[in-house]
Length: 190
Image (cartoon, rainbow, N blue to C red; front, side, top):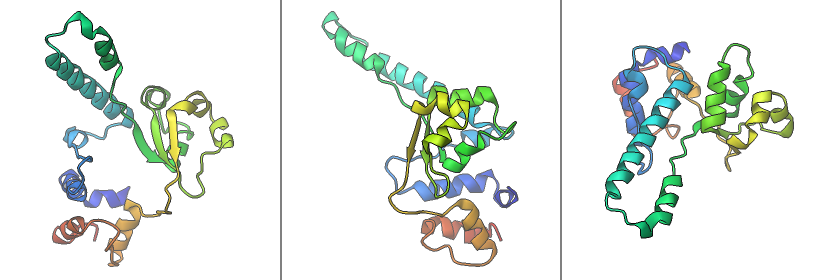
């Protein structure tokens, strides 16, 4: 999107960090923007998946260096615990996987089949039985697609926020104040 080009990766990371700084469970990584080029979702998921598996496997081995046979059952249970990395997106994004040549088939299989997806249903893009049956990949991996409809309608999107800024309209209450201040200070999306 052309509106995305108004803020380079340094600005996007800074805004993401400001937007999540009050959260105790959300974080921001600069992995994607540290790469030389645009990167496909499946490649990023695979990199994060491997990194998390490696980190937690090593942490487990360090924590349990002295293991006796009485703990075999506990070890087996620990071994079965894994981080469940999922791709998060809107139902419109999931629907885009049906578009020919937009998403590689092997990437769809990795995203939906191996990792799974958490899908935010948006008005007009509900995930009905008919939706799942409309595409073989959705039918095959239906159990890996976890949809939810927010309890409050939320039509805010980054595209809407950028459009409001360009029109010199307020984005107060649409994004955290530190992000608004950063956008104003750096004259982004004008």
